[in-house]
Length: 205
Image 1 (cartoon, rainbow, N blue to C red):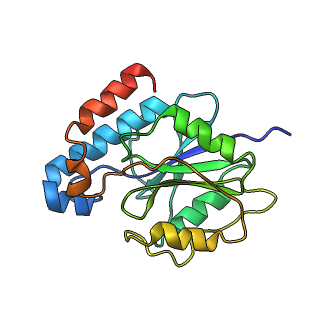
Image 2: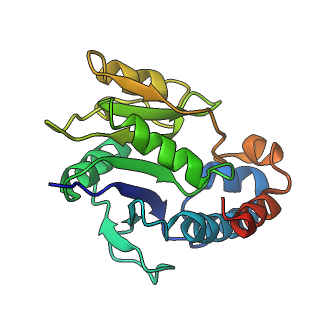
């Protein structure tokens, strides 16, 4: 039986004063909110209509919206980030799954396709980021579901290290390192982030 590929965008509903708090602390609430809206919209438009995978929005708060596009929506539920990641991983239909954020200007369809290719021969895949975290994590989810999200020190330089420790004994593929924009320093490395998003969208990448 053929198994679907599942691309999951983990996201918070864009609203002033919620989400992207580290970014807002450095650039102001209005800029952080604009980044949330532009980044989510462009990421979804760029990746969400590719027939090679089924696109989901894993959202918080659970009852929020409206959400852009025609993607399926699944609630993240309660708990810390690790509990929410594990919950969504266990509730999606069968097939390999890749989870990404909507705050990665450099993401492309080619990178998503590469991740799913790696999941054809690995139990998991990670895309590192410069801050010690990761912009993508994927699971093959067969013959059984692995939970690499326990006891991870989220929003710290140890997040990737902790996740890889949970995956010890399993085969892990690596993607290229990309920046996710979580704070003012990261945004400073992409002063033209809105143009970058739009140019990749126009190019169909």
